[in-house]
Structure formats: C-alpha cells, structure tokens
Length: 104
Image (cartoon, rainbow, N blue to C red; front, side, top):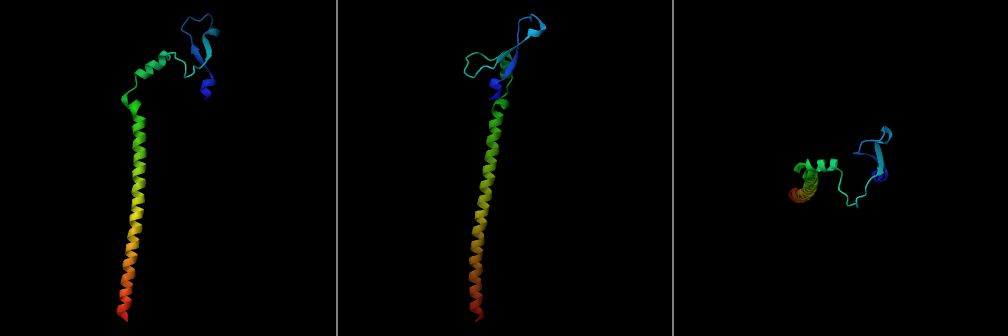
C-alpha cells in the first residue's frame, strides 16, 4: 500500500539539461491504467521460466497436501489405538471373570 503513495525516481531518456534535473519524480501508476509497463519489466517477464511461474503454487500444494496427509495419518493412528485399547480391556475383563469363576 505504501508503494502506491511514495514517489519513485524515473530516469528520463532525454539528455539532461543540467545535473540537477536529470531525475524526474512522479507518483507510481495505479493498476487501473491501461499504459504498458516499463521496458525493464517487460524484459523480466520474458526471462521467466516455467518453474518461476508454476513453482510456488506446486510447492504450496505439495506442502499443504503433505501436512494434511500426515495429520490424517496421526488422527487415524490415535483412533485405531483407542479402539485397540478398548478391545484389549474387554478381553482382560472377560479373562478376569473366567479366572474368578475358576477360583471358586
């Protein structure tokens, strides 16, 4: 937000009249202007590779997918362990009842 209100130097292509006026200051263009971007930015856009364009979204998807997968694995493990404990406690209770009947 701050960059839209700050003044940025624009170097003129015309020969300077004097050293003091060689740099012109102007406000940044808004995103709604239909003017073409400066030539420097065009060169940057031409040098972009596929990885520069799609790399960040792919890494994002991979990281969020991994986090989700491992979170679901941990939740599944905890639920499975709780079920195992419940089944084991039932077995122990039935065996204790049987031992109690056999002692009498």
